[in-house]
Length: 410
Image (tube, rainbow, N blue to C red; front, side, top):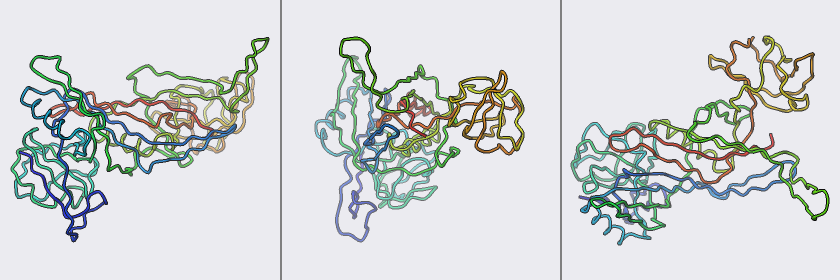
């Protein structure tokens, strides 16, 4: 049973105007929950302009495009229902549930209910948006959200059917831009894959809770080892080979290009949502952040006094190699200090580096967890994909995301 609610406002223009006589149809929902594979890609669009000494980045979209991709495994009866949907709705607008943001209710929903108690602080719940109350692919109801509070949402009209411990999922208006791909390799089941391009995209706001250095987020978690961590250091330029003798290099930038891949493995809806909001804030390649090396780059050779700016470290570079570098000193108790090296000199068998300001607290080598360099980086891709490796009705939500980053002049 699919119950479709109608609103009296122009849904695609924003919040519904309940005083308007205009009627807007809530599009038919793709009701099949992915149990084989699911992912979601955020696609920004950034214009990157690089000069010899710096780069400028301009965002060309107000919000990243949201592109969920779902694969469902269906029995013959379900396949017949899905194929009918695909034939009717291929290339048209539909409502697609954002399943990973769904909330499983402990209680029930009654037909007369116009209010549903859920935590709306985690997930994209919008006034003027849609939701689905889902029990099975053939037993669900779709409605319009007219109010969002921290602990509940309000609907335009009664939901119209009784549900036992259903899942409440936000809906987005989307188009199946690649149609529906069907695989019938198994005798008793069929896999159907669809990628949807969302049209009611917005830029999500929120704070991921990272510490700030120079008003920029500092990423404080080491990259997850879900794949090999690769780094690349190269001098951008043009090699002019005439075929005779030496091959000269025409440098394109005064600094080297350093990049690596970073990855995250997030467990549970709150952690996945936090990473999702943080990726929205990056807006593709637009907004930089500080990335610690999470390597013991510098080894403290003498205790640091509270007022000290000169620090003795084990030799790790030529004096010029320290200049201008930013560092993070993280203690084992979680305290972090972010500073810049403004001078360096060799003192005997050690090096003395000068920080721009003192730490304001005494620190010994035994207290230090990381004494490492900070690099100001940006994402090196406008597309970021969340892969949901373990999600479903009775499984914990687990998501992985891997993306390349590139250092920018600091």
